[in-house]
Amino acid sequence: MEVYTGTPAEFVEKIFNLDFNDAYVLPDKPIRLIEGFQYGNLKIIVPSEKVKEIITHVKKDLPMEITDFAYREKGINLRIHLIKSGTSKDYNGLIIRKLFSYVPEPEVLRVPSEVVNAFIKSATGTGGIALICGKQRQGKSTTASSLLNLYNTNNKGVIITIENPIEYLLEDLQSVVIQKDVITYVRHDERISIETLIEKAVERALIDASREFPSIVFIGEVRTKFEVEMAVKLAESGVFVLASFHGENVPFALSRFMNILLAGASETEYQTKLANFISLLKFVVAQRLLPNKDDESKFELISEYYIPNFSGENVGLLNLLKQRKMTDFLMRFSKMPKSQYVKNFTTALSEATTEGRINPILAREIDPYRIVDIMRD
Image 1 (cartoon, rainbow, N blue to C red):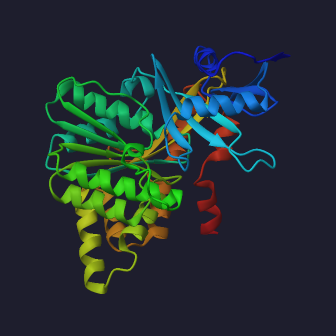
Image 2 (cartoon, one colour):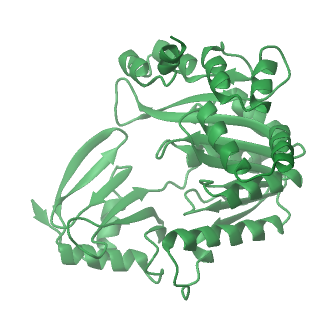
């Protein structure tokens, strides 16, 4: 087992040149690499003092409170997350994620064509709001960047992204691109909690974005009530807002988003806010990354979507949404056949299994709508 003795800069370059998605660097332990769904140890141990030097190097002049940030230097593009391990009072380890400069096209990622079409129609229309949902590490930012780059390639406008940190760097093609890293809005002299610090920074970035005449605004990881309400306000003004949002599937994500939006609203405000949001909603897509059946180093994107529409069966879903009968919405959505406007995970998993992309046993185990049958009984 090799003990690392080089400089921090050499270490970062060495790690970046390896094939991996995430690298876990803990003091006095072998480096662990994750590629897709495969795990392996690198036969290199980094002493604790050397890890501290690496942390100081990658963090540069960022405020002490910031523990999640992008590192970009001489073509190296990484996302760094600092961690505490053992009994240390200081951050003594780091997770390194490789960020890629190349933005894949939607069809390469297997983003559903129905979602791509809904995005193009919405982005070139009169505004609205769309959500890309899923758990952590499910490729939401990659899907969003792919869609934004599609617009950027074919349309003239102003694209603004608000991210923490920026994961894909987008070039100016047909559109003007303004990418805001939330960390740049953090003031060094503020003595407040990290949560409040980031929240205030996102608020400032959103307010700035509203005054910069955007055609599209992408908000990475919407969490707070201010962010939810600001997304809706931007959509009201004619901007198309694309936001990533934590939610395992379409019904749960919609329910959670509306709960945040409507929390504390008076009876009059409640009805107005609800009707306004539904009128602005263009689509919701939820996605999961699963291991390829034959090669676990490769991801397979599995997506479900809901595109509000007044045609056929979709009217029933829309009425349930308006009434906030989310349990009934879940029940109906889980059993609806695939259409231009609806596709659930059960259908998506079945298709991926038939195509030989994922393991059928895994597909059955992770289908979130299996529980719906239990709920019905």
